[in-house]
Image (cartoon, rainbow, N blue to C red; front, side, top):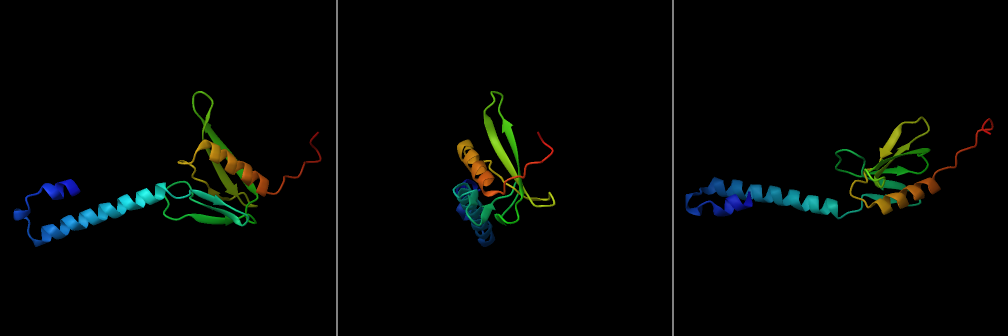
Length: 134
């Protein structure tokens, strides 16, 4: 849109055309800055209080889930054709089994995904052994 605005003959433009052109430049500039900031911020932050992360799907805000609400973490791992992990998708669930947060780790390196999963497993309560299992 900027290129079109620059190459339009300026002597043919009226006052409203300038406004539309500058408005479009501002709109696409804000979108470009937002996308750049989104790619250069942390996707997941886990600390002693809980997990602050982007849920999967389309979202504008990150969500915080405290460790006290998380009981189960189901891990879904997708592999490439050679058996290397591509993406690890943890789903954090509460006592009733309702999904609290499914983490979006799409742009996170696989090593960091594995490190996050180890941290989550360390923070969750240990499962009780079933006395009927031998």
